[in-house]
Image (cartoon, helix red, strand yellow):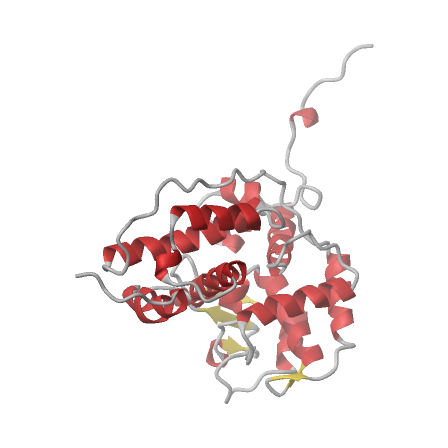
Length: 296
């Protein structure tokens, strides 16, 4: 039986999310962002009936004018996921047709150097105000230090429970339900990160880093913070914490690629090397290192 028309935002909340057993908070956020961007393009809240080949293709073409291929493909993937489930659940009649992906350029990974990260943390000390009654200067500074020494995905790190942070041992546990690997990870904290977290830690609070605002504001706020600190910002880039993650992985790769792979939680060193290791930080063995010199 064909069901009543729904707004896309309603469909996300009442159908898509409840139909998934292990959907991560970050995925829900990305779905909502895709719907929000589609709504801004349409000029009104989109309904499931607005998922047509013509409309979605036009939206993606326009969106591609000012955004990277990766961002376009992400929005495409989220909208098509909603669309396909709507068809299978009887909320939409026609499945998506040929809506191609954009070819993404294979850019080498870029990370921030330790000097840049130190500059960013020092800049945080100038911040005023609070986040969930925690001084902003300490909230951001401790999160950046923890991200650098764990190399954890930021959405997972931000989900760390206070009960899973042991400052006496200098460790924290990131639970599997927040991670792509679905496995708990125990991380050792650096002395700097431990000291930074100690300044904000509250055992009575659910999360180490409570965030009372929407996720979109988190990304926007950190981008402005990095810009005001004078760091290099990629055009169109939103998840700048990925640069800190790459920094951690790249410096680990200076010791060994296997150590970097384990830190990143990847299944193969090839993935780590291709997508996370900044070659300017951790140059890999090259043929020029073994080629003989010419007798000239």
